[in-house]
Image (cartoon, rainbow, N blue to C red):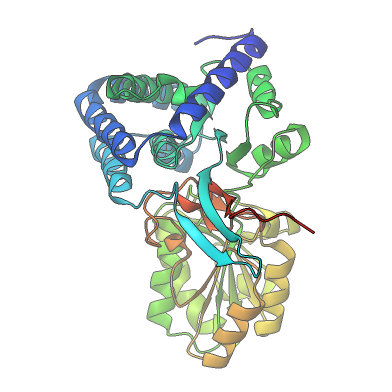
Length: 421
């Protein structure tokens, strides 16, 4: 892979993306859909090349001692690659947001004032070791009329480059500009920093990753940011939660895919239920390889727990690890979540309607659940199709970001000679 010389290469890519965005802005829905279908077919036809590249990344990650959960995020197989290709086909079936009139009013002076969806322009996406993001991001940006510059993590560089090369060859064959989808092949940090500072060419930067990545971009970017990804998610098990339901939800939220941002990281349990619930859920979590860390009270009930520290309450593990705290009541649980949540996904498990309503009203997060796993925070699960990420901020977009969230609006005004007095 290329290293060094990041400034000139990234600048050239951003200039090419700006020109591609100008052309994409006027592309028809049929043209974009044809390109997406061609890209999906190309992923199917060239799966061998992509999986071979991915095997290099996985071997390199294993040699570095990267955790099992992160290896899982990095790994592609035929089923996952087929799912990614089908994700592009699902985007084809979604309504094209570009050009949609979302409001139209007639003013007293006769002016007709409307608002129409338009693409954002050029989107930069910086993300960690999940090569499926490369496919999802490219497809969503293309359908919404945006050019995209991708900067994946160094652990997935071979996979990401192979995927983009396959997709852009198909894109070029469809008649849309090849430079609508680009990847920074340099693994040099200088290239990433340069991408963050192309404020005259890139309209928005979307980071997908943990706290360290978000902090770095926040401190260095001059391009506007939509923050996504960091998920210090909690489940609060209330005093009367059904034990079997609570057990199944907690195990799913922690173990189904522990390396993703909507996995639960802290379990809060009401003191009255803890003596009955922890002996039910604890052994099953341990059996699945989960490292459990607990407060003093939880360690009296359940053996095999390490001591939970202040750092644990703040940590997004992205791994088979879970912090447990026993709380006196709902208010204490709400205070804990208010203190440590990253505003991603929070859940209460309860049969108390009033407590459920209070929880959903008071918790400030992108997704707030009652009696369901946090793992559902996902664009496809919410009916949006694929997603570009889960926004944890409040401006422009919040929660799973689908096609509509990759557009802005412009006012369109029609008159018949009006002048302002």
